[in-house]
Length: 157
Image (cartoon, rainbow, N blue to C red):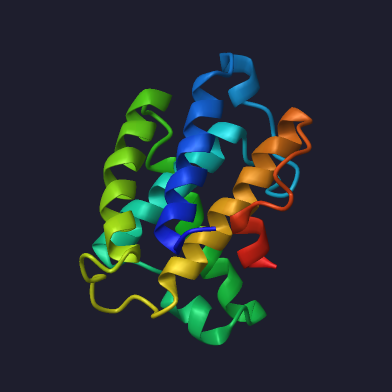
């Protein structure tokens, strides 16, 4: 399976390769598990996750409360901002940002560099679980059934 940085890297690359191959209309397909979001929105969110982690901007209230209902709106606002901040960028620009942020994040996951102060000690697991969930969401939008036993899915379940 490799370490978490390897899992994150390979899943990120698989998603980027897949979405780059899609015609424009398929990028706008709604994903089944994240209502109101398109495939492109999911990529923007995952890019935002990586960028926010590097900035030390993570929804710590949510993670310290372990999903208590009263903190969920704050998490939703945080993820919506990730998507809206990238809405006017091309897919190539969003992926370039994710490639850059992802490479730095992967070195942190591997232990080569420290995480910014204030991030939960299990940030790597959060990000690997999230990328695995959203990879399956993209697959669902495209009618693809595969990788259900992949490393990020196994780690997240």
